Image (cartoon, rainbow, N blue to C red):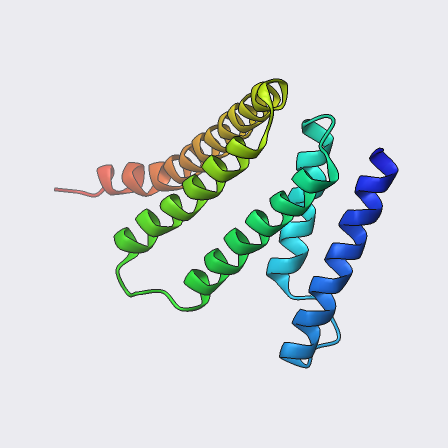
Length: 148
């Protein structure tokens, strides 16, 4: 069954890539297509027993999400706050659609995986914030030594 799902994923990705290449005249698959395929592969690793129908639907959802996010990235509105809210909304809608396609056991696996991703992203952000604070600290210290 897993082999059939992987074959289906490959065929679907190839078809989408071919379509994207023809549209763009490019020799390489577009970034959103590559990202959607990668996301689907990661999802297949974390959520067990996906059916071929689920894989097709998930691929469609992930491809739509990545294309929309890529378009937003390439053509921002000029309002970073509005763009961030729209990005959040796009990702949330995709998560809701994905969740609705899964059976009860798969939903539990999906929620656990999403929580692990959230924790990992928060940890990365905390480390970035600490590095930024460390870079700013010497500047603040040097201004304290200036004669008054």
